[in-house]
Image (cartoon, rainbow over all chains, first blue to last red):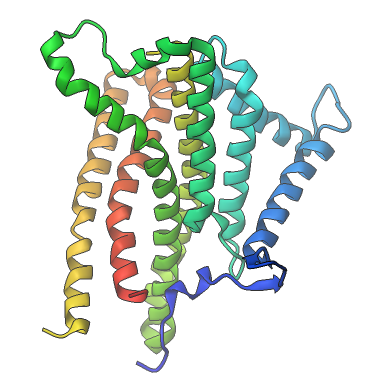
Length: 243
Length: 75
């Protein structure tokens, strides 16, 4: 094989502006640059899109309105009563992950959500926030979340640990799901591109697969943002309504 | 057995996880098709759940695939 394949090279973090505070490394990296671009783009879409406030929306305004309505609908159906006040949080999460995933699909850019530290930070915010909301709203009764209703006492010995475990495993599954999807998808793209580059004329076949994979990855990029947002909604609903 | 061949075998074993993802995704869409065939009017209501199920089922398989890639290219 003439060409070496390094599919994980695309996830390399580079320091663009090295900053060190004491022993702490807070350099401005390519990951941070992409995050900045994501925030700027989302803000620009929503601020510029809704600036005119036309009765008959133009292209930008209807895009902004569509994304707003999509998340508002999601909260309405999944959280229902009392979920309205958490709309800004879920909307921010959804738009950030969606734009980060989509920007990652541009060749030679960087996928922010393929770093587990990013996805885990997001998932930890969701988990801690939801737990605090539940405790503030219900106080001690929040613990009823772990005790299923109408179950014989003997069975509770088995069910309560399972419920506890499934509750505390949430931030990990939430983080790893997004991270693994992005990591596996982008690695696969790079591997097939490497095949295409290394076997000459026959490389048209892996190239074709790569084209199909890009389509799948774009679907996955949108789906994973949707899944992250909808699971946040379901967890919120648990904390607000206690089943 | 040397380390290089053990890595190859390990990566291959990790890919078995994709069997489950395949079965899961197939189940999700077969259920979608049969439910829409019975009641075409329900398509709008059922489809979001199908894609949610698709994403959740696919993610479990990708955990295994990610492990395979990590074995092959990182360690």
